[in-house]
Image 1 (spheres, rainbow, N blue to C red):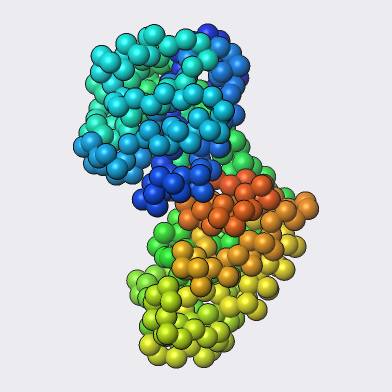
Image 2: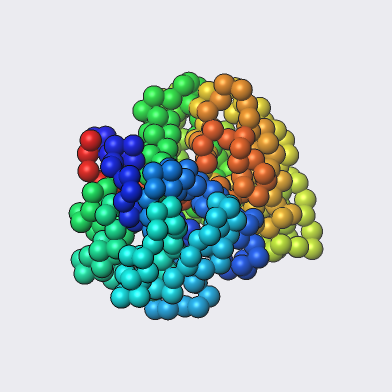
Length: 398
């Protein structure tokens, strides 16, 4: 099925409600928003498209997990201030997302004005997909545009409720996400590689199930690698092993060998005597020489070089998950080395999953050197798992 796109929706002169995802890491402080504004930047093409057609643009988003209650630390006004800088035009932020004051203010808007509604999750009806809450949101506008791919896997009032009430379409960001991820799955140039990292095997089980038979190469790093190394009999010291996933890891390795998929596991690792940002001792060791009581924190330099070189020989790369404990600066080298190795490779399509992987790429200043960096962590994972995303399925077909 092909979903209606923004170019197929009559929006000229209309009031358009746009579901965006401005869920920035606000816990790092308002002053840090500019360092993590990928999701804002990614939505600019849709906003500018609507402005060019004399629309009144009403943006709605969630921020954090207020659990249906007002939380002053999770207000969207600071995000609106950053958006105004990026657009170089005013963005008015409201103190609520529904109610008579909001209705009146939206009604009084002029063409080409932009407003940002308050955090949708301040209302319990959002996450409960309450029909009444959807109806109140829908009453604000003539059209609805779904441009929040990062929450397309959530069946919430603003993702699946609104398309039932207003003429709707995918925004440019959502369209790009669906097309980029879909193409990488359906018609990739080969060799096709998956670079999988992150904390747990369990987070990637369905992705591996869906992808494995399609791959030419599978590279494993991060916490996932610990369980895979344990599965082939390596000592991993004090590192956390997912005991209930050992058999799955062995099965993946057996199936890969049967299907001719080359599996790449770390051969050297960075270890520390404690799981902390600044441990007492850090050493690089062979995976055959990890002592008891030590923690594997990152892939080693030889492994990172080997991964980067092999990946550069692939034509399509799907990357989801850092190679080590990237949030601890001392253990970010492996991720940095691999990212630099694949960034901007001519003739290589690199699709980066969202969440921590996108944040890593953004912090390294490599956003513009990857073919596509997804804004959706959980959504991109579920898409790669082959699952239907409710926020996409709810939109009308062409």
